[in-house]
Length: 362
Image (tube, rainbow, N blue to C red):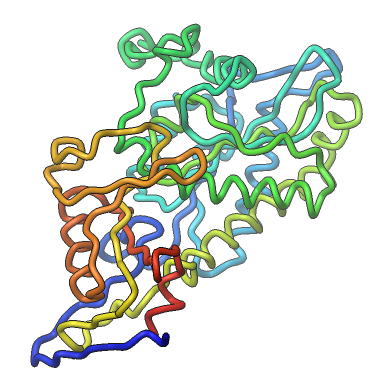
């Protein structure tokens, strides 16, 4: 049965909210901001090989290449945590992104192993799922010992403990779903465009990701200790190819954010209807996606009530409100954002089946 619309006209102005697959842009912000972080640097070489390859050098070259590709897009602003061989604290790397109110944070690294292991993998913030993920995170996090006053700055971390290396909260996982989406795009490009061995999207407790408050990923571009992969990573051809794959993923993410399955509408104030009812459709506001099963109590959701959750794959989705009134759900979206959930967005279920909003709202 075709969806029926019921319109109750009123003579008021209402603001139709943009779908918030990411944060609302701050006042005056007219570009999509991407912070690129070249791992290590200065007196921290990162991983090294006997043949003289150093992670800090390769990571910087790839990062600059990614930036050059993205800067071709007039709608994207690129900010680097470092553009030369210098040491930047992990804490400061995240602070750079936070001060810029960035839309994305991408940290670029290289892997190493005692074997001929090969392939690329992209990490999002999370608890260590296995010992291998933990060892990778521990290696990258060990840079804190090269920082001044690290005992005080990182008192809550123990790089040798999977349990204490990171204490995730709901707000810190607020960007998990977006991060996973970007990470998936990067891995798809590595596999499909470059024919790289896909080591998949993974979760681990990287301190540099913990410092940011936006969708963030850490890319391990490959193993410099693998004979053939090391040559590829250290070559201009390989670095350009990897950079293009990452840059293309960022652009795809940005475009998806504008025309994504969640649907978007104009941000301009318009004279509109007060109530728009879609029969057989339930709209909800998704507040967050988390790997943790959290009680749907108001104190866990900044005082918001009417919270429900649903398990989708490995994630729990947390929703606020449930109504067939599209105007009402936009009001709840505004309330969610005001309450401290800037990445909240509207989802819809038609006859109980999750359906893209733009397939329902014309």
